[in-house]
Image (cartoon, rainbow, N blue to C red; front, side, top):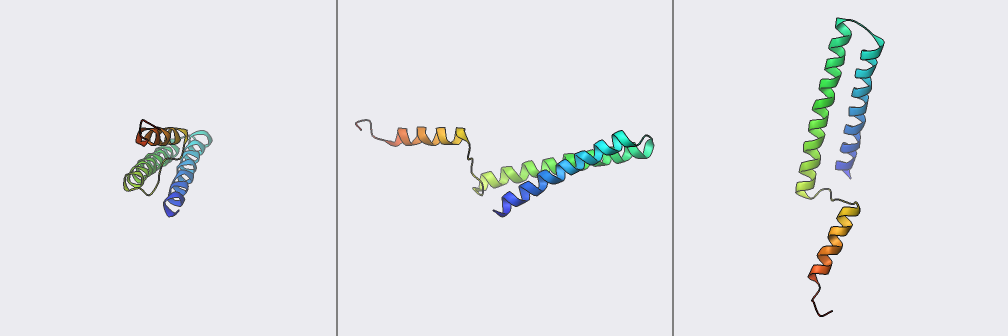
Length: 87
């Protein structure tokens, strides 16, 4: 559950960073605003990369498992393949 909390917090931080960049892009004009926009977008990219690596490591270590339709279909296929042919 802790890993899911980190993922949700990272998504929220990414959205906040993106909103900050949009605010500085629209609201202010000038060199300082351009620097703040670039800095906010840089933070967003860094947070996105960290989140991707975190999700990948959590999946690779088994801390999170896929829960969607594709995962259920694959599980059903595996169970069908494990059954003997005579049944």
